[in-house]
Length: 317
Image (cartoon, rainbow, N blue to C red; front, side, top):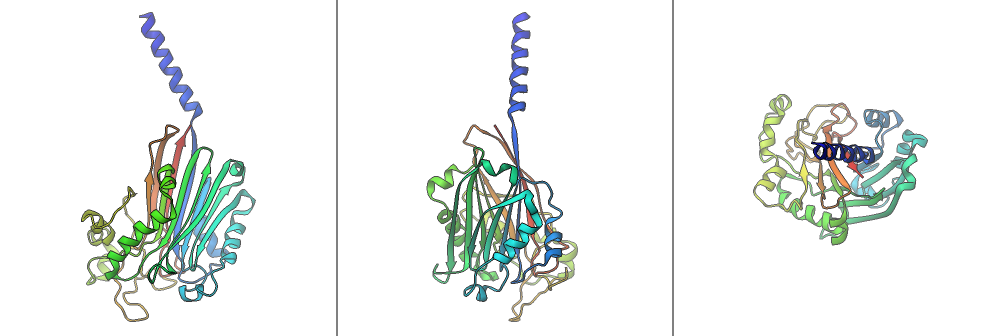
């Protein structure tokens, strides 16, 4: 009995020691197609105020600041970065940005954690017009914080209903070319987000019905359909359960669906804006990576897209 009691006490001690050593990193990821517009300070507050007290903020945007066409001639995103930095004040530091035409990604880290950040890398991949133009593609930032390796990718893939095969190819191209093979395998968490532009395999949709019963229409979602039919190499990425309404296409400054665009092309509402993630559990220091929430911001009305966000917690030694 004495030996059994000793072993139990030792087990309890080890459990307590593990709990005492466990640290947590909390990450907020947000992606938004801004429709070529620049939010004012009030709109930035509305966008970011609901997301409080995270250690890392990854803010991706598509059609950022100006249209895709205008971004060929001026891709600078300084104004947007300054407004984000103004919102965060001195509590967070902008550690890196990556830009490709109208696609942008900014990473902010809590000031008190800056000394623990290392191994920053930035990259981009073009997928527009024979993979030569940056109107579509991806930007990526990878870094290490403490002993955790994180990679974040923000994409804008090919538009239109009929381009699902092109999107499938570009999805894989964006991920694999943002990373070298070793980078991809050695990251503990890879987050891929953006306007992936997957539509619904049903153009004849009753707008009023999808407004009220939107979850029924997830059966038509192209990304899920392509995955189920094994026509896309997901590269180990997964996605949280979707409960939010379609994120596109809305009349600006409203939450009312717009069924046709300026070219009178029918565009059924769709979940174009997504956040996917891949967890590498092969390293002993990672105890758990958990997606805490996955949702959209339906009340943000500036653009024809709704922002999508997700929270993650990494527990590590």
